[in-house]
Image (cartoon, rainbow, N blue to C red; front, side):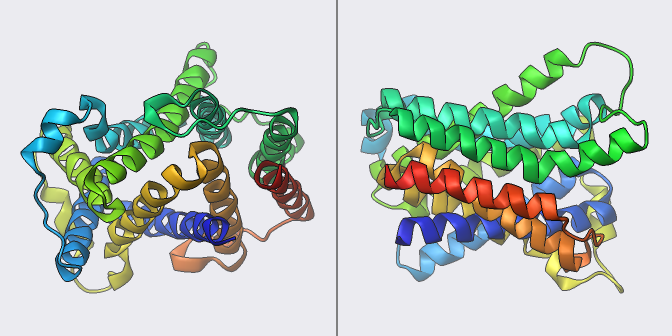
Length: 314
């Protein structure tokens, strides 16, 4: 029961982080600089927690020599996931930008568990668990996508923000991006085992991500001038805690993945993320625009919970 609770809680934290980072980006303007701020603060937060726990920030040379190269790229995959979502939105719209990566996350998480990729514990798929995955996906689509789809159809609108061009390459890119997110969860879990610390693994992941974003900002924005827009009178203090919330999420993933597998970690976190997102929308938390929850979203959440039960108990 504890892993389920942790997975749901970190998912809720991630949904709150999304609201916080969205407000930060509204002040800064540049999504890349806002993400750099978030990753940097997350790195500093995890470093402080490590020092308070009397853990070393360094890595033994023996770890580099004995572990596969791919255990160090979790932070890079996180940056690719974030950046690609920014690129997807103008081409396929908000609903599909949310759904396509989720599809990739759930399916790749299941594949990783089934075949034991990245030296993870093999957890073969059964028909009951496959049914649970499909039920969970149905719940996700109903909760996240169906209300907007019905609204757009009623207004005669298309979800895709751009009406020209073939959307399928962008949809496939979204699915591949979600797959990278599931891979990041597994890789960070493996790094946590190698370092004997999920906290250390989360710190390394954030550090790599912050360094990658540093160079992205230099290339794309030619500097960090816009960050100062988020300072001064009238700016809420909580816009700076998104990085710490992201650090807790990555830490939770690195802790859970070796214990319950990538697939279950992804699904439990998605359950928490969607539940938290509904709370943010319902009450307009953290400066988000208030969007009252409708009955079909609650139905979708119940279906998602049913899928999670099948996945976990069978």
